[in-house]
Amino acid sequence: MDRGFALVRPLEGGLDAWEEAGYEVEIEAERIPMSPTGSFSKAP
Image (cartoon, rainbow, N blue to C red; front, side, top):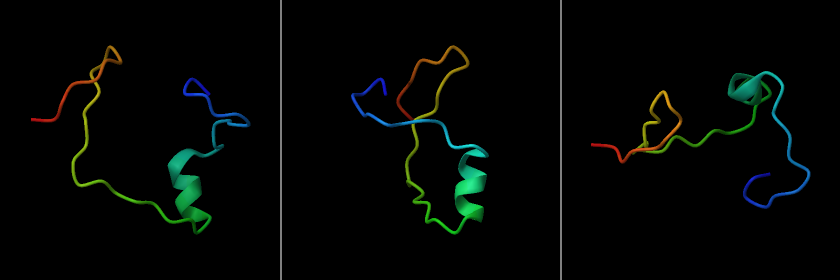
């Protein structure tokens, strides 16, 4: 919603529920870690 998408809401059960329902999940090779403060930093 913060990025301009409409009709968006959290998925009950999260990503685990998505996978259990049989939907595909794409795993990225490089992830950007998030600090406990919620700010992003580039992966080493």
